[in-house]
Every structure is written in structure tokens, then in C-alpha cells.
Length: 201
Image 1 (cartoon, rainbow, N blue to C red):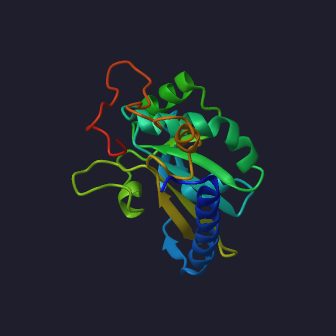
Image 2 (image 1 turned 60 degrees about the vertical axis):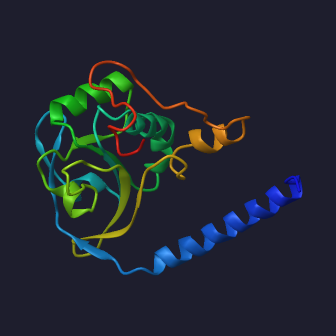
């Protein structure tokens, strides 16, 4: 029997309810103590994780594979409009796996006006679970809380990938006939990832 509009609406209701349960369960997980990692600004100067909070007690850090990953660029581009709103509530920064100067140049090229730092060589991605045994960085996002005594805990994290809740492109393309088809994000130029060379593809 063909799917009816009412069937789709019922499924959507189930998804929303499941997300509510997921959020509640995630809030109940124990916090993870985190050291005050030293990262680098795009000018090469050192910056501690604790400094990235600014005047907030909460911080979101995007784990970005670097300029070679078209998918990571798609997520990064999408944050241009969202970041100013998010930063009214908490700190927000993209942590690239590229060297500082490369990360800075690429952020400028893409028009990323939010804070960008480099975790290259720091061990931060590994410690947060966003680097595989093969050495490849993984994309995702981590949430941190600075406690009254200045110590830092991670309160949640999630990987990035096609169909996730962190990029509006996927649900939009789901609405058109054939969905995303064979479309893949791309920014072109040397070093761009192709299918199979990026963990998101």
C-alpha cells in the first residue's frame, strides 16, 4: 500500500518524541573532566580552551577535518549565519585540524566570521574521540562547561555526517524528488576531498 501523508506525519511525530527522549537521556549522562588544552589561533599564538569561553560558562567546539574535506566546509559555511545567535548563549569556535596559517587562510576564503583555531598536533581531537586509529580527524561538535573553580567538563558531543541535525542541507534535499541523488558538497580547487577520501562521504 502506498505511503499516505498521514503516515509521514505519524513518523515525524515519532521522530520528534524520540529526539525529546534523547535530549533528556543525554542531560543525565555524567560530565567528562577535560584538561585545559592549548590550541593555536590562526596567527600561531597559543590559546587555552578555557580562554575560548570568553565571558560565558558554556562553549561549543566544532571538530573540523580541515580544508581538504568538502563536507566539513559545508558545515562550516552553514555556521556563518548561526554563530552570532549561538554566541549570545555560549562560546563558539571551530577547531580545524589544519595548521594555524592554513586554517586562517581558509576561514578567510570561506567568509567564516566566527572564531577559528587550530588543534593541529595538540592531541585535542584524539582526547575528544575525534581522530581514528588511522590518524584521520573526524568531524563533530563538543559542548563544554566551565565550573566555578575554573575546571572544565565536557557535557555532550555528537559526530557530523550526512543527515545529521547540524546541517540544514540534508532535510531540505530530502523534500525534493530523488532526494540528494548523487550530489555531494564541493568547494573545488587542489586538495578537495572526493568520494571515498573523506570520512563523511
